[in-house]
Image (cartoon, rainbow, N blue to C red; front, side, top):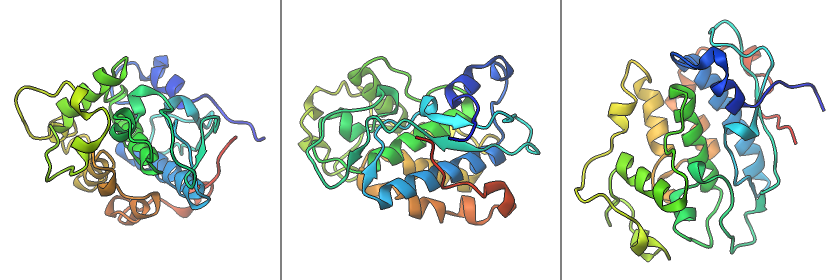
Length: 237
């Protein structure tokens, strides 16, 4: 296996990134392109990772916060991976990055749980801290609905049918998504925000596949050179 650097969790928590913005939007776009390419590679082979998080993303040793310094990343540790063709599944992964349908006990979830996790990673790349930083299932669900707003039948028709839906501590007052306030245009462009918002849809049916996400305007309008993304589909195991 080729030599790689630290994992993304260590990079985000390292002394170089303890203050200020961890990565520029241009670097986040480059990193997300590679991660989505890796997810596309897995999902095309009917495999879902189920534990995509900064700790399972390896970063090139030379990664830095300078746009001129390319960042290469690879998804690693498929210890919790599962075949998409063989439900039912149990809960798996790291709670801060688990999709709401998994937290709510849905037994036949699919590769869209990875897309949610990638949305969480994208948010963390921009801010340097987990978006839903809870310690257990119900705390994370409470944070999810606190940030994204309480799902209604029109926005997530299947919500009330999920096994643990009645146990969720919903906010007492309904409110719209807080994402626009958390990720203003000075932090993330409109195209980037559009992708983040779709990845973090509580309704898995509204999340884009990795293939569709890679065709989003955030990537198609990008001017990164082909050379800087030559190894996007590689994964370390």
